[in-house]
Image (cartoon, rainbow, N blue to C red):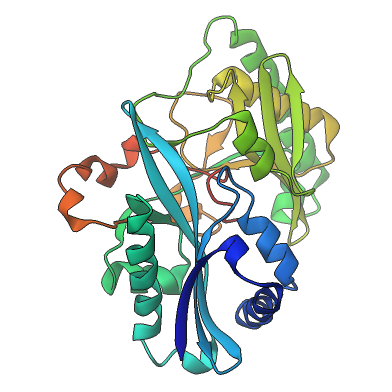
Length: 325
């Protein structure tokens, strides 16, 4: 077996095709291509990601990707990496050290690149492995914020009255918040660990056709319409006003989506670091799927310096950072 670590452009087309074949085998229901994976991993300000893969003869049996991004925190600019696309083929999973070897190789490589930490939102099985066997710390779970537009469709009850009531409620919620805009326009906090966002990053991040962009004056937002088991869901990926998340930008996004799309529910997944009364936060026990946010410092000597990363209130993280729907 051979373990390799490369940047995206350093991997040839033939190897990308092998990675895609194994990716589709590991994640049933996916039908991606090597070209598609390569394009996805280049969609950031760096134009590349870091990849580690383990090859057994002519087959890729394990793989992981780290997508680099700069983050800001109290005037400091830090290089973090988002861990994702992790897999070990089923027939090799008895060897519990394979994934550890993958991460060790990436840590060694990315540390030399100046990276401070890996971030991730692992699935149930990976989460247990990362927090128990590796050095990842569990900080919080991403929250779900919703506006039900057609409640009967969401509950699948075929009840006209429920739909009528939820439509009236959503119109009222948008209307009353429009009235409140002159009085309040809360903004995100500046002291959180938040991704370095600029126009170049956003255009590259949302260049795939499934994302829609809306913009008016200094407000802009991106969203995606997804059929979730028969429920037409509008996921708000990001919203901004003069490069910051604001209540005004959120209201603009919700109102525009509501008026222009035939949907059952509007949803935002992630942290909401300002007060708002437009979207309703779902109680954790009712979350459709738990999305645990974790991190791992590449240099253990930095534990004390970055101890604030253990506090959920110090983070701004959502679907903009990593689309984990």
